[in-house]
Length: 527
Image 1 (cartoon, rainbow, N blue to C red):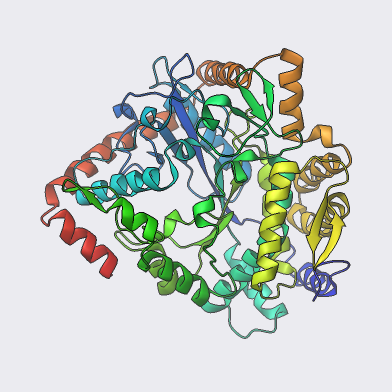
Image 2: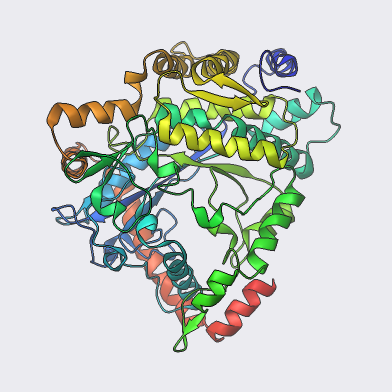
């Protein structure tokens, strides 16, 4: 079935859901966010101080941890049924963190601050246990393979699972007698394929990294025009973070991971984590007896694979992500394409989350044929085109082997999302999903409303460099969180208790380690 024009099967499925006798069938899906931010000095340089002890152990604190760098804080919300609850929790997390940062700031944008090359970016440390060492060695390997500078980019990840009651109604309309883990996984992989087809719209609507700091480009082959001294840009870019400047790593360009089925996805990732790569073999796994990377394979572990969206299942302790998926199927999806927005103190807002929730429902309900290699190449190119040139007048994208204007395709998607937003809004007079959709529709007709265009205008109006603008916004956000009144004391106390408990958990893990690191690694990869 063609992705273009009217999708009769989608319309049939949506009508069946609307008439299923369960009017709230799509409501209450579980939503969570992981938001990364670089800790920087008040002068905008990456912090070289350890992860603040008052925030707990980065190894064992579920809600406040670090990503690649010791300075890259990651805030993780539990899943919530309502996006306002999620954002309140994220706001409370920011308040707690800011009370323990001293003079430091959380950088307000995805693209990093003034960097002094790889050596200026400290790798995250998690303690002396085997699991901690593995996390640090993995990160050392990432730095070796791709450069540490790329790892200083931050983003917002949106985690989503459909409500449990939805699956019974959806199985009935798909003519399935069962809505078991196999049916749910197969459905999520249909969603993944359609997100690969349609996810470019997320970069257009929400990308907010059209510029980078000069220091980020030092030593790079890619050349960008200079906007102002110290600021490089692409004139029509939406998200350089999601382009070949950022996460779309050329080292992985030859790595094809299928989402045609769970079996193929696991097969391709397993092949990548067990197949040696000559370049990485040349780097060596150990240097003078010290691990430089976990192994010399195409990927050290599954998480090294960069993708816009991932199928996920909460893993048991020490369990590989592919093994968790094989054990019990897909539990939720992780959308990884959101830039941190300097226009939102917590980096994201409700309109964005509501639009994404509706888009994921669209990706599930639309027909989703298998993706052949040549189609995948065209889909990758669409994402790259929108990331680098998304605001370009008259921009064309590839659909079913034909060129189609971005604006025409985007309007078709908005039309398809209208009915989904009606279902999500049922019983709510404020119609928040329809409002979120209307806000995005406006950006298609008026490109100046896109966050990337807003950032460009802000730079033009203030005559600031990207560094100056981001530092000013970071300071504004700090003031905002510290001045919020009254603070949620109950939750701040909860975070303080979790931090203390996490430090105790880390001590217990370190005390219970009995095997060598070599044995621990061998067991992890053997399992």
